[in-house]
Length: 62
Image 1: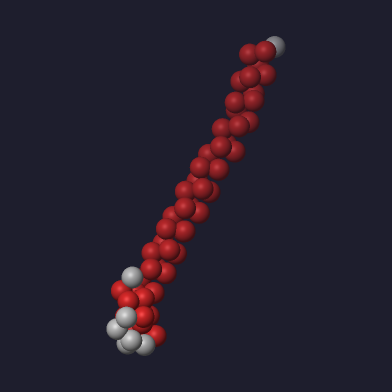
Image 2 (image 1 turned 180 degrees about the vertical axis):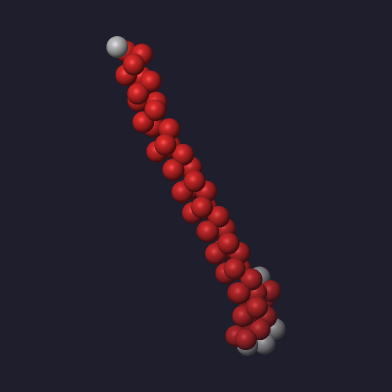
């Protein structure tokens, strides 16, 4: 909000909004990378657990 306020209300120019823009962009990249890492970790765990679960189910039914 400070970057927008600097440009729109205080009429300081585009350069005054670059630092807040960089801070928000870095947070966005950080949380995106954390989400990708978490998704890959959870999906790999699901792939490893699936074959053993199928094997146990097949043996139980036999």
